[in-house]
Image (cartoon, rainbow, N blue to C red; front, side, top):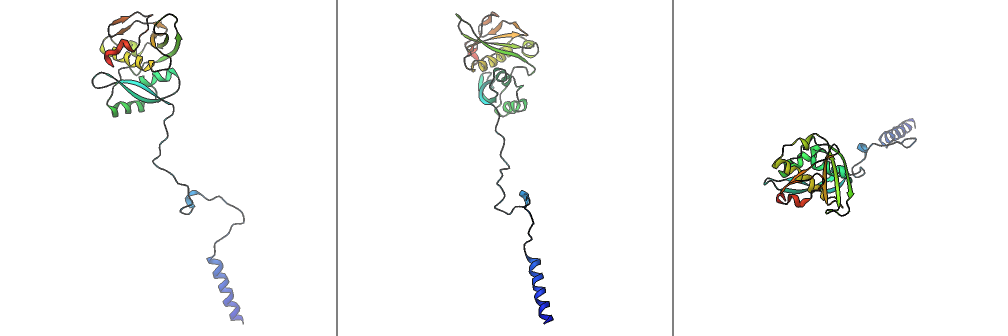
Length: 200
């Protein structure tokens, strides 16, 4: 009889050792410990979407002509102008230039102080972007083809904004005369894309 009890007790203890342990209360299980099929799927190659809205800026191609490319920018005028200067997300901008073999002639140290669109009654164009830039960068450029290319980049990009027909540039608040395809326009006369048609 004692031998029978010993055998039964041994079987019970063996079964207990082989069973699944239970907890007295719920506990959190890490994702790494979940069985295959229960762990959430992940995509290691997924990249974050660019922030901002797509907008066309203008850079310079190998033939010294304007080329339209799309960048993600914040929905405001200053961000749009900074996107063509390259101060907005500069690493992405440099990658864009390298991959698409494009150039920008706007000095990177050009600072946008303010950008305001005004309606000018009785003038053509009507809606004028008054773009106020700091003294460094663009206004330090020598007169010539490179400055004309840089200005064309700014003007074509700016006119892509809704309700902008022309551009007036200021240097620390002082209006400046601007070079065009056909000569220099008075500081109070806006420039537009027609003034740089030879570069398009």
